[in-house]
Image 1 (cartoon, rainbow, N blue to C red):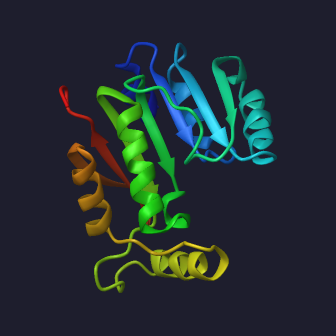
Image 2 (image 1 turned 90 degrees about the vertical axis):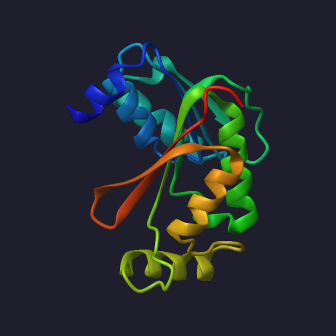
Image 3 (image 1 turned 90 degrees about the horizontal axis):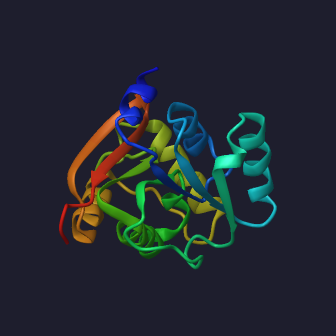
Length: 185
């Protein structure tokens, strides 16, 4: 219900969900906004999971599925109201995370919003054990993965041009930055 209230203010929002996996973010937003549309991206094989989940939730007819690497797929500039980077930046190393943030910025309409979700540790990496464990897992199981702090993401978001950064914690230890592309850039 809370999600429905927040997204119902947008008329026919266009959503971009990069590295969506099963697309829980896009699906929840589409369920909350009956006239919304989503572009859902993931790698070959994984995108089939998103297709199946979207069909299961009755929103597949409002989705475009773009298979491919989120660093390289074609993205329209100044098109989307919402871009989701849900738990993917940590797998890409600092340069890859910055690149995804910059791509999200370019894809958003003026006053569009980015939702960047992850487990963020504090600067000393002591306060959020889930984030530290996730970071260790990323370092051990990916080529570039790492554990990035709130401060690092905040700096990257500001550098890309985002304003009005908010950090929310919808679920314990899992946080999301909500950042807005300014009206004029």
